[in-house]
Length: 107
Length: 172
Image 1 (tube, helix red, strand yellow):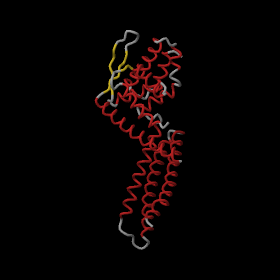
Image 2 (cartoon, rainbow over the protein chains, first blue to last red):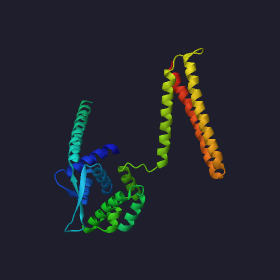
Image 3 (tube, rainbow over the protein chains, first blue to last red):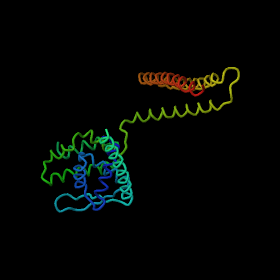
Image 4 (cartoon, chains in turn yellow, green):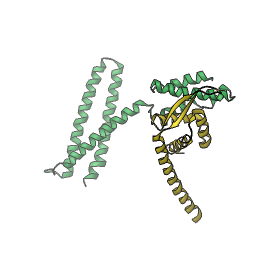
């Protein structure tokens, strides 16, 4: 798949995943890896970029089960971005579906 | 490969980034492996899941929009500078009043080639002088000299192509 396009979609998934509840890195990465079939290792750079772009922020919290965890929290800027990406995604998806329907059924 | 070895190798691959950024990234991967181990996975397997370190590092650098090959950037910048100069020159030449004697197209063409000719001569002269000075340094000087001569030749070919494609097309 086109990498630029994929990046946009992955941004959306990450921001969506933390939009309602903060998540720690490992949890978030596992979830996104499963949803998008992208390797775990390649999602951390994405988190880093989103943090650097101020779409999310991080904090540390101790955990009972193992090492301290780094949590990701969405920022206002991130929420605005998410709304925009979802809008774009829906628009794109609708027009592609329309096109498929037209070609698939009429030819 | 165990966790420490993996992190050490990864750190090495990322050395173009700022130290604080590298620490941040290394910490994430370290935490990830710790979580995998805590959930019962083998350390070696957890490391292996990340795949090839080189492509992982490339992916990370890509997220930072770091171009790993620096020389490419310099060449691209130089080309941009020259084409900007070229555009400017073409604009100036094209905005001049109509030529006397020869046809307008011909005088424009002459002027364009002349200015570029002077530019290239000046550059080659500059390079040659530098090359000569560096020549004192021996083979390094010769190497740089050859590079400059190659550059001059490439510029000649480039400008010839520009003349053929641009000036003649623009001024019918």
